[in-house]
Length: 99
Image 1 (cartoon, helix red, strand yellow):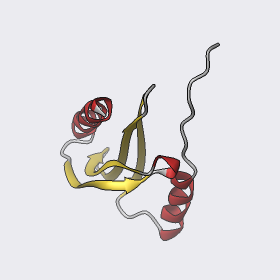
Image 2: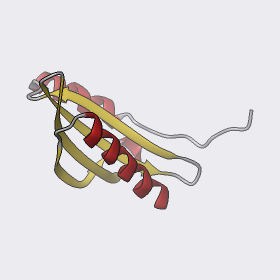
Image 3: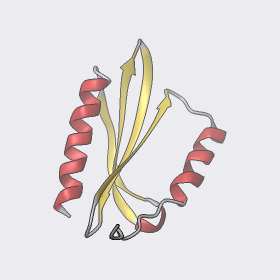
């Protein structure tokens, strides 16, 4: 969907600027909960002289565009990564309701 591409571009530009000097480490498709395979990219940068990693998922439905961002230190523990994966496995987006 065009909205997901635009959201990914904006997220990338924002994070590259915020964590400069930063670089894109990888780009691929990865599973995000019930959404299935979605666009992702991983970025490595700095903040307050500390290395930061960002993993960004972007997707869109008929109604909305979503960006899910996870920030970690340079080398997150296996326990932290397992916890993050469990959280990502539960992600779902519902159809908006009229209020």
